[in-house]
Length: 377
Ligand SMILES: Cc1ncc(COP(=O)(O)O)c(C=O)c1O
Image (cartoon, rainbow, N blue to C red; front, top):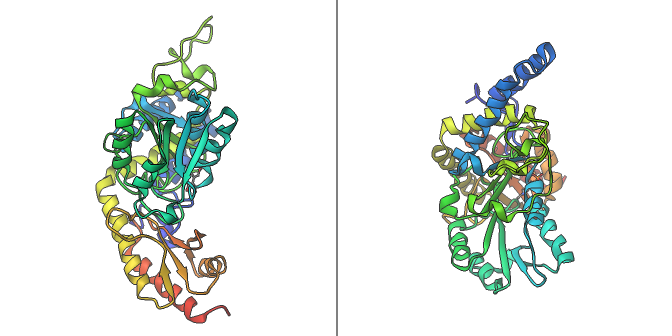
């Protein structure tokens, strides 16, 4: 794995829930793209377009969608905003979501209050059966349920198919922030039953910040009003003299202008690696790592697990309270010793990807145990 992921030689990277490192091949593709641009500019632009199309197809494979349902967006926040502001709301509508969500999947829904839309938030901490609690917040004015597939702070995994089924039966739209899931665990839009799924590429997808994916189910594409316009959302692409225009009937209609070609090269390279490794296998390894960490963390006296370790609820994220140590201080002390993680959700968050070797998990736990023994000094 060191050949594929040079980061292993430098660092114990337990921070894929924040910003993941690039695989070797992605760094090489970006270097080659820089060289190519410097030496011959856009001479081979048709090759770049092929790479763009390949990325759409690879992302479609990753989501079990079709390439026509994939739009390339800047990030999760942009995708969620295109959805929230694309839909046609009526005064009195409501959206149901979760209070502990990352801001990208709250603020935009809260902002709809100007249009008379209420954002109803479930307190996850007070819900023994979170899916049922979400359903209990719904009424006949509920137009959409939005959740993260995996909660960023605790790693709690939602039962997406259960929510999808509920939504389908009632004609409620279902939107998933998939950034903490995609690339770590298998994701299938048909099994999940979502209408929208959005993720940026810089976490478990192992690509740079600034390019993400927005899945829009074919049958609901017409329901999103277009908010941006440009040459990239029509066919044929290079006919700049068209007097009038017809937006594409695919999700590319949500992309206005010049694509992020540098990001496309990088993300395509990283996603192709994940597909080659196989998402089933990656998912198993991610869960093995998390289960192993949870078991070993439980053995440390002062540690209290925040993550729910029940089957079906685990993900790539394991969060714990480190006794009476301040997680923000401890995170810095671990970083100095070569362990990268993050203080989140009132504890310390470990988020290793599938390729992180068991020895590195053991080393991280040993360093953590040392710091816990050292205490607040
Ligand atoms: C659940 C969730 N959504 C969204 C984001 C980031 O959003 P964006 O891609 O807009 O930067 C994060 C980043 O931590 C996240 O954890």
